[in-house]
Image (cartoon, rainbow, N blue to C red):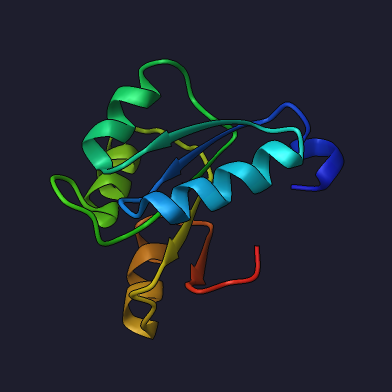
Length: 113
């Protein structure tokens, strides 16, 4: 997504780390995006009831419903929103598993916003 395309785009940030959520929210709002946040997969499902975003930024390790389980659920229900996995638990195995489940990309933390 180019910066021009990002202006006005709705992004859902799903991460149990409040600082990571806030960092992404501030940066994305600075690009002109509409940002919704969720602290875990269950909260993300509730946020998705308000409408589908243009993209989901998804952490893997979270309480209640983790990122892989959420990704599987979304793809199983036919939700085809692009998902970018952003996680501190970035192994090659996790990246391959996320892509097999339908993630568009995999970014290890920390990263340069």
